[in-house]
Length: 83
Image (cartoon, rainbow, N blue to C red; front, side):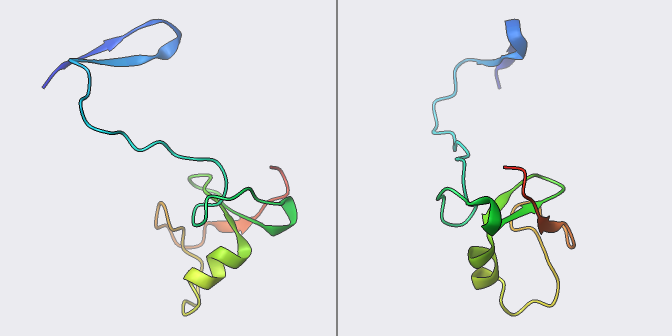
């Protein structure tokens, strides 16, 4: 294991450098990765994951409750008009 090195502006580096690919989170819908119109937006109030209403419902049709696809907490999906 390497040492964790702090630098200016709260950047954290790892020594030695990481040699494997790191997944970078994209903006947009959690499911389809497309941009989201404010009228079609669902947001998790716990982890701030954004998704289209259609994408959320098409992936969670059989559930009688809302559950975030990222943090898996029940009851945290809501509407948001602040994009």
